[in-house]
Length: 484
Ligand code: SF4
Image (cartoon, rainbow, N blue to C red; front, side):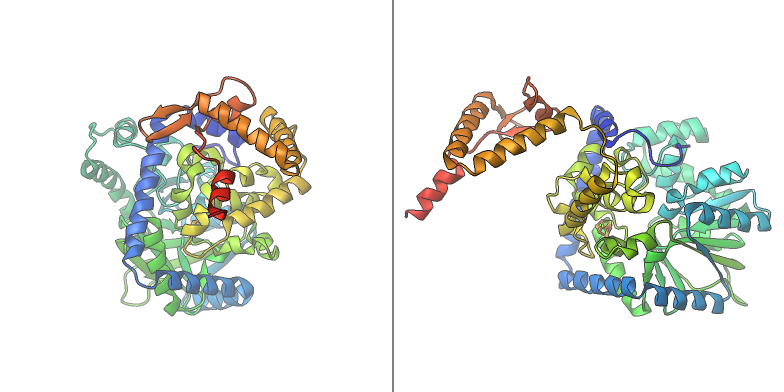
């Protein structure tokens, strides 16, 4: 099991370690690229996709502006349907509510469907400390649980594991025969879980959406395990962040069309379950339904007018797949459960900026995340806002050598920008130097500088390449065009 809390290692150290593992780097690169291209072809087939994004953003903005009202409406509908609502201001209180329900039910085992809020509140640690076994029923979650890791991606927790890795884990923990066939691996996991579904008294899930108008919980998945976890046990617990509300049932169609296409490139996931209260007379399903509404930093985020937008997130994972930084360093380098651009945004909000002051800087601000976000969250803008906050509100650690040199070069650059002769001269010298070091690279079909030996230039090529300068500098091209 992973250590609780934000990992103390800096993102620099964790990223360096991740990048030293070529196998891991390739797994992240190829898997996220595959999801990214699936999204592109899926959205190309939907006329009016951009209008759907606009509408979804409007709905989320309305929810955040009137969150108190929608929460009250949601709560009264859950109660009317026979469910129970538990308010959890903190992670500890959310875990305590789960433990109390398990204690009352005399449960020694909880079958869990995928829940990022469950990861966020470190629920497995709390259950283990109370002597209750948590069994992950989602295949990806089961894999990372057996590996003692955190999810590496919001929608694909085991995105970094190859079939060989999974086979080794199953041999070691589930005592299966080695196999790399996906169907066999799935069957092994299913076999191990089936009897647990049948005997567990408590099933736990997250919620993709909560519908205020009807009190419904909406969960989407591809494996069918959530259906089992939420209907077979006698008690169903829902862990839900308070921002997951949508106002009306009619809004659901918009979000479902956006979520699956943005996340995995599917039209819809294989299963969409709409759970409206515990079972009634003549129905199957759980006798009790408990909805735990988790704040854990969300109200604080809501109170900040600028950062409020981060709560529009529907956890599709598209920004991770599009992010060049995530593709390179993977999910674990971010040090907490939420990774990628959205992790860099919400981790400092939920955990406090002083616990995650480096995360807003883990971005090239290229804007790829904003382009793919189905609810159009302006992630680069919010990251800039957080960077300012990190500088103003936290104790700045002694800057690393690379930052000192970056600041010095920025000062030189600012000085040269005010003196055109100096800027031209500097540019000519840079071009001359870069051309001399650039080498042809067959994989990219271009000339690149792969390695500088001397500091500070070596700091740049330590983790990225430098393109050879264009044959004709921009200023010369501009002059040529404007004199035509
Ligand atoms: S920020 Fe946008 S793209 Fe990223 S996970 Fe959330 S909804 Fe998806």
